Image 1: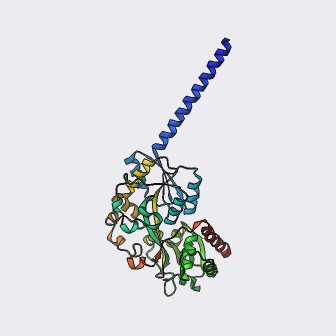
Image 2: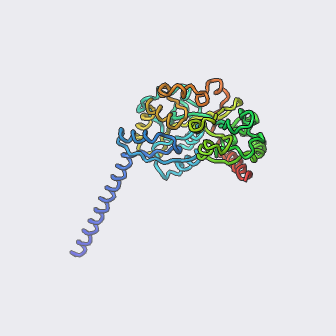
Image 3: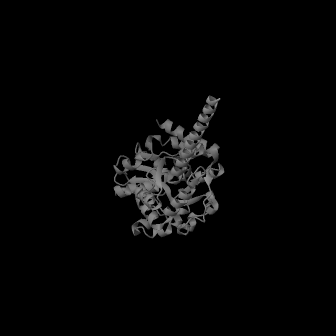
Amino acid sequence: MRKIESLFLLIIGIILILALMVWRLDNATEEKTTESIVIYNWGDYIDPNLLNKFEKESGLKVIYETFDSNEAMFTKIQQGGTAYDIAIPSEYTIAKMKKENLLYPIDHSKIVGMKNIGKHFLNQPFDRGNVYSVPYFWGTVGIVYNKKLVQGEPPKHWNDLWDKKYKNNILLVDGAREVMGFSLQSLGFSLNSKSMHQLNETTKKLDKMTTNVKAVIADEMKMYMVQGEATVGITFSGVASMMLQENDQLHYVIPSEGSNLWFDNLVIPKTAKNIDGAHKFINFMLRPENAAKNALYVSYATPNEKALKLLPKEVREDTQFYPNDEIKEHLEVYQDLGSKWLEIYNNLFLSFKMYRK
């Protein structure tokens, strides 16, 4: 009988020890979650010194991960493997994430500094009332060219990219929406077209550019253009700005027939564990001195009007990167095409890349 009682007490003891271990593990996990903030951003898209500053001010440890496309970011957040507290998607992806219930509403009672953002960057169609997002950066897609390497007139329009003088001398950004977009606009179509006739016509024209395309690349474009290894590059305005700072022979132009006007916003993914920390980070980035410092580092246009006033005059008055209203009238914002049409765009772009090889 005593053996049975001893065995019973031993089992009870083991259960209590295991329960204590589980409790400690849960507490450790909760402590780790609340004392850190996990940020998911584009590569080289924030001043590292600002992350250090935020850590010191907030007491939160920043865990920083990067992605190279909206699609990759969307898929990873949808899968839910990592609990990101902050992500920075583009406008059409924000619309898509809203539809899929992947975003946590911003608690505007906790936000300080929203008044610093220009009114024309708020209440956009992809997020009316900014229920889920706060503006971070904005910009365009355009043409970078090396004046020293261009023969004759430099490119000013999308159709110029098909000129034979650019044989094996054009670098394209590795993005389906960007490449399909400027090709559509070269034919007078919308970069949000859902017409298979227009898309097929565009693809046929794009295939004729293959002899001019030296490479379809991402971050490497900056180095190649700065070093003069290509005459022309199609890229984002911020990347172009960094190029121009390192090579005074480079120039950036937004074709007058139209281009893409994009917005990247701060959001809180639905799986976030540190909601309070996410709001603190948003407030930190809304402070004019931080937004200005970030804009100078990243070289993209800030939507923060108070931060803009802190930037050097030659930066804030440069219409290449802060285009005037006349230029903006011809710019289009990417719309969420839906999974069906996005797959069509991706497949057509993939076929183009395979065709050129």
